Image (cartoon, rainbow, N blue to C red; front, side, top):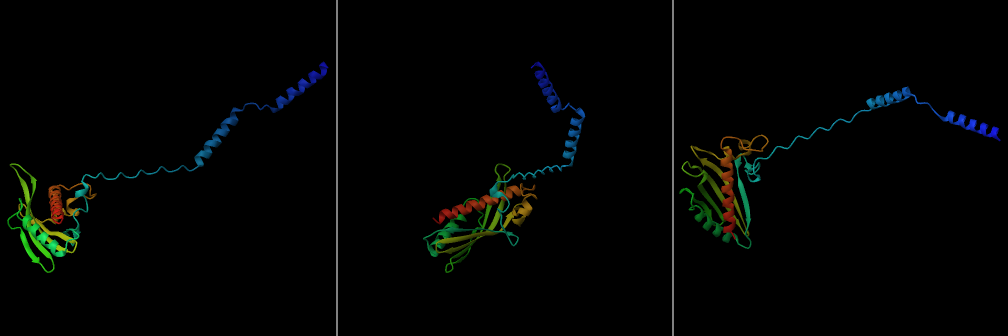
Length: 220
């Protein structure tokens, strides 16, 4: 019985020895080198180029590119007001009364007046000169803005067109010199060019908006 036990133990020992693989550091190094070579052959993804940052807008939207629409090289502002249920004649009468008063408001030059009327076609033309003030005080800075206002009256609506603009400052010159995007704004259209463009453009747009607001009120 003891002999059988010794033979069985010897058999188990030989089986374990046959399954055991000695540690081989050279084999590990070789496997590591092969993995490194494989990684080197694998094409690496190119890093994505960062998108260029958008230019920082330094102009309020109200005065930004497109706020002075150009038609045949001239700045032209137009707006159509809804005034239903007024007839064309009623719109015409309201606008005549408004313009007579507007030409006498503070800041208007005495030359401001209604220049053309067509009662049958319900058309009105006015030539207006008014001051746009850049700075108050002892060293007041202002310019005279000259423009034409054309009014076309219809049943339920009124079309107002402001154009033919010029400034009288040290001398008289076309308003387009200071208003057009290509003159007033830098290449990226994010800020005003130097040379007084900002003050002329912002104050003129403010004047236009104030006028249109008054017309809207008058037609109610």
